[in-house]
Image (cartoon, one colour):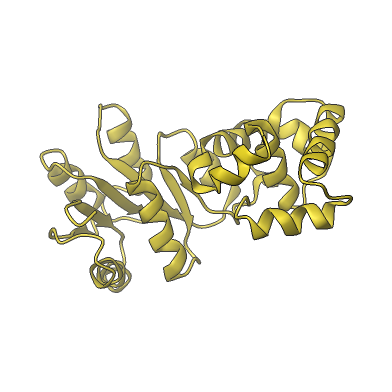
Length: 223
């Protein structure tokens, strides 16, 4: 991945310099990292710059992050976009209207920041596990659930135990302490169907209760 070209945008110069330093220190790229505090300048430059990944904080000068995303949404772009945002329902719901490749919460640490970059540059999607899906509304929550790539999990374990994509979606939401009723609304399936998937997971993984199911899921990198 050392040949990847990365662009970072944030309004706070000190914060911006910190993100650049983290990427350089961890050898994600040997290419120069372009950085911007101005959304207007970002648009003007990136439009003629071939890049692989844009990391963007929504708080930008002159043109904010949503104006930047809206500009790129109207054009065919071939680069990935990672958005850094607060865990605000209204903001995250709006972000789901754009074709972004990842969403990282702004209070995340360095490890998660690097994991998000690695997943996205590897061709996967990355959405922060601590995004509060309950307040997003069903449509926005489902967009995030469906965008999360199965490749970030232990595929060998999934195949061995014949866990389906839908069962994995149910498992991830159970791990976030959602009830069967809430999961049904988010996935547009009945509460009874959620119960069927939950029982199927417990049968396939040979566990007798939710606590044991969650323990096994975390141990095998499924949630």
